[in-house]
Picture 1 (tube, rainbow, N blue to C red):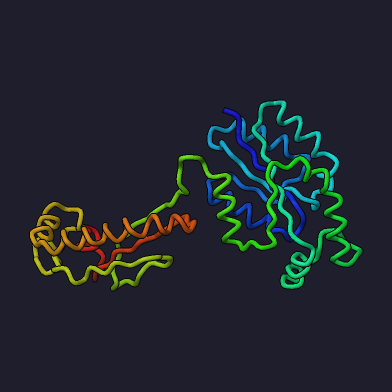
Picture 2: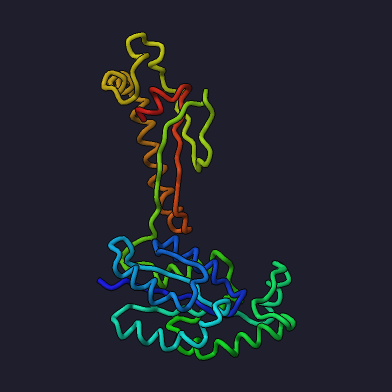
Amino acid sequence: MPVSVVIITGVSGSGMSSALKSFEDLGYFAIDNLPAQLIPIFVKLCDDSIEIDRTAFVVDVRSREFLSLFPRMHEELREKGVHVTVLFLEADDEVLLRRYSETRRPHPLPDQNVLQAIRQERELLSEIRDLADHVIDTSEQTVHTLRDVIKDRFAEKGGAHELNVTISSFGFRHGAPRGLDMVFDVRFLRNPHFIPELRPLTGCDPAVIQYLQSESEVEDTIARFVDLLAYLLPRFQREGKSYLTVGIGCTGGRHRSVMV
């Protein structure tokens, strides 16, 4: 199956890097500032790969050959059966001026003031804008609303934004791992550590599991944790969160947290 390609372009300062990050969160293989002459080579490599079925990359006026090469290159890719979508981002001059003032970054078209550079770039990109499948004006967009727009237009139909959940056990005695989004503290459950024959075992061993499950409080706690996660996960997913790391902690990280 031919690779699906999204080419992100537009006026500098319109949010192309933020858009690329949104595509990466949707599972696209993402590259920033791909030289125009490498586009056919890169697409061919992706097409030959069994691991890459969709890719998104930014090409803009930083790639000087882009303006002259792109129209013909775009046509040739489609003639080869490559599914190419061009996303063009733009914003009002006043908004772009404010963004450049806030970031203090130079415009990629040198030797003129920022407003002149913005207008020149807009004129240079007019032909490419005409080829675009999607044009998004980011003047009123934030990073988050732009992400939502891209998700609505480009997420696989019938599929939800992927949320990768990692659950790990740990011992508070050794300190909580870094990067946890949520922590469940189960030190209130009775501790197998104080049972001599259970002390050398772990929460994976049947004897420890049976010991803990003999009290209804354990099953009730697990059920409440599951209910809470079932409530929260769709909401994290709706907000575009890609990774959620949940830690379950007990004193030593050997029995209770492992079992739960």
